[in-house]
Length: 263
Image (cartoon, rainbow, N blue to C red; front, side, top):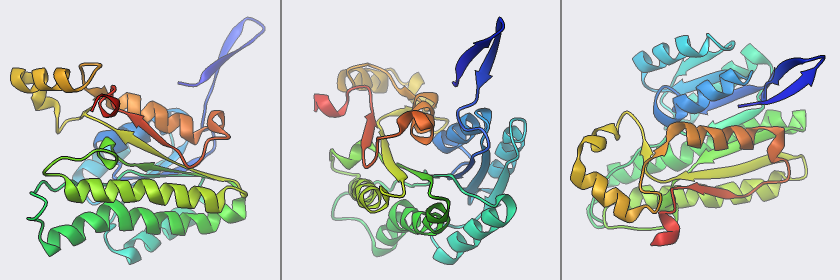
């Protein structure tokens, strides 16, 4: 991470996000946590938002080793909670430079088996929350004439199977929302992009490493023949949050080991 400058024989490491303020939703664990830690290690002050209090408190202690970071516990399926969280962050830091809409859930069900409650829940977390977070932070980003919004979508936004309809629909909607925000905010400029991971090795998927049949299935489906590492996703999120990605907006970067192109 970062890059190096030489001055009088001494190597200095330049932080990618020095003095920036970032929000990472769903930042208490998994990919969100990895992105938050990466940002903090690159000099960003990070606000993580998550409904999981215990995990959030543990993660914030790790983040504080690198930067001035805060944890806000909130149910982001409720718009009022989103507004309160953003206002709290603005009051604390005075700025918001980067928003990562990472929070998401998956509900497996046959295409004709989703209940109304499940449909509303997956839409509220995966799509509605991302929209209202983006809407709220844009108010300040427009005043700053600067901002980065990164939406964590999924490779399933562009492919389908029998049991992920709700997840695929919401993630495809998130990609479409990315494009609309990108076009609308480009002249400011606020850069808006999406990242679509494939099979990622997280604490929730690591048990599959001990399942030979599942790993064989993965190798047959994914050309690289392995899980994507959380840090690999975080590295893309860092690139999109940094000045190195200037000129890129409205894009959906798929990191899946070749899964989508091989289907």
